[in-house]
Each structure stands twice: as structure tokens, then as C-alpha cells.
Image 1: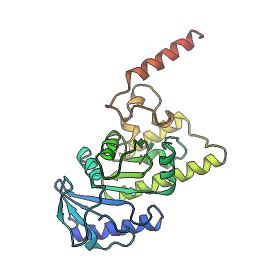
Image 2: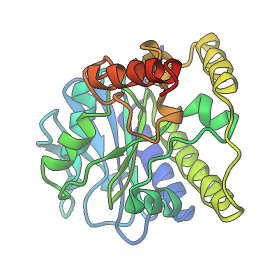
Image 3: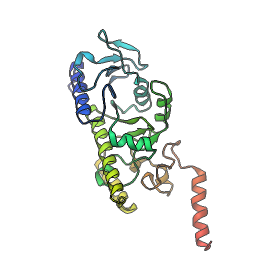
Image 4: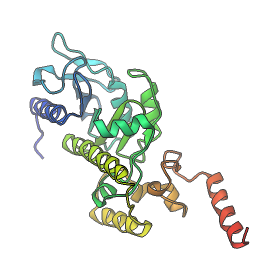
Length: 270
């Protein structure tokens, strides 16, 4: 396997920055991108610059604690680097993290509505669903802590009143997930304007999950990890974003008891 040199990766980061900017996923100096070189070296975009106008010399190198290893004069790492480092720490499979403020996805994050409705096969297979991480003050540990609750179960999260975060095993894949999140959000928004989406059935969703499993797709997804589904409860897609997927890997006992009680009461005709 030929290793891509750092300069080429910096060029790729700049290219993705332009794509994010040109697609209106960020305004002004918003957003940030990082790539993992190894366990101790990471490349990231600098703070205070437009992601649409970067060149390779803008890109900074940091260690796993966000400490600067190399940066040209006038540039310092993104203030959100803590968020990126938490993802890398908790998901060794992740090689790149992308943060942006896409219009529709961010609107859902601001409205407090997770992207959980199964409305399109591609979104069900690629994303599963996109939960909302609780609000945190930018540049503090609050956002990493909030993201940490979801990072083991999903490859994309909305950041409450803030934006979206996607991560994957390559820079291009992490960017594609951001595109998919925004497209999903736009579709859901427009469907709501037309009277509400016609959701895929539970059976249709499970067939799509099975396709994903057969494809051997990498990353984290409810098809493989949703503890609710394993416990016989509604999966992320049908729980309105209130499932226990962000918990400790198993369904909440109280939810399970409530579901069983509901079924028993129904059988008793009460």
C-alpha cells in the first residue's frame, strides 16, 4: 500500500473545504476538517479562515491532545479540535472528521428534531438515523462530552443549535456523509411542507438494514448496533430519536418493562 504524503492530504483537505464552502454548508470562517495520519499526528484546518479559500500551507499538524506540532506563522488549529480528538480517541476506526453548518440539517438541529424518519432507501442504508447531541459551548469540553454519547453508535450527529458532525474511515467518506445528512434533511423538510412524509415500513427498513449488512459497509449503524432492535423494541427510525442507542450498549430496562406492560394490558383489553 502506497502511503499518500502529507502535502497531498493537505491538498485534499483544501479541496473538501472548497466543496463544503461552495455548497453553502459553511459561511465565512465556519466549519473545520481533520485527518488522522497516525495515533499521534493529525492534520487540521486552521481557525479564523474561510474553508473555501485555503491552500496547503494553511493546514496545521497537531498531536492527539490538540497540541501544535507544526503550523505556519499566522495559523493555529481550529478551536473545535477538542471535538475532533474525542471522536478519534473513542473510535479508532475513524480516519477523518468533518464539521459544518449545512442549512437544512442545522435547521433541524436548531429545532431540536433528530433525523430519524425512514423516508429514502439510500439514507436508511448510509446513515440509519442522525441523533442530536446536546448543546455545548464551542471550544469547550461540553461538545466533546455531548458527542461522546453517540459516537459509538452513529457516523453522523447533529449538534444542538450548532451544526453537524460526520466521521468515517477516509476524508472523502466523511465528507460524503455530510452531503448525505444535508440531502436527507432537505428531503424531510420538503416532505413536511407537502403534508408529511410517507415513511418506509418496519419491514422495508429491516430489508434495507440487511442489504447494508450484506454489503459489509464499515462504520457504525443501527442495522448492526441498535440495542433497542436487539431487544425487540422499535429501532432508531421509529422511536422519534428517544431510543437508548446512545446508552451503554443495551436497551433501558424501564423502556423494556413499559413495552411489556403495554402489551399485557392490551391483551387484557384495558
